[in-house]
Image 1 (tube, rainbow, N blue to C red):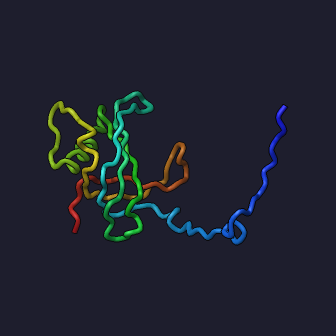
Image 2: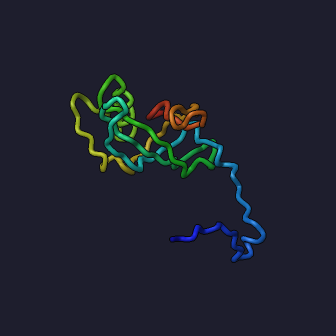
Image 3: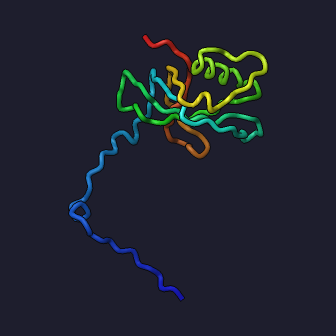
Length: 145
């Protein structure tokens, strides 16, 4: 039989004894406004309703109004079917400079690293993010003033 371990606090460094100061100010501050986003990761997936989509991960690379947002990550889902495909078309035009037409082939590896200016707003999440604020891209391909 194994003996159940009892958790113990071990002070092995001066920081452990004195405590470590952490600034959590930015933890509750979500990126918003006019931001330049860079595509970091794109995965093909399926929505909860079984529709094909791309899960997209973007990083803030420029934020004129608040430089604290640089480096933060924003997630989105681009639908590949249904009437929501217009957002995917808007996003692809913003990141590539050309709007896809008709039936097109998307190569995620060619999109990763591309940047675009976007308008990001804060929405209260739902589902597993119930009650938490989260950044949402409201418009891809904006002109920055």
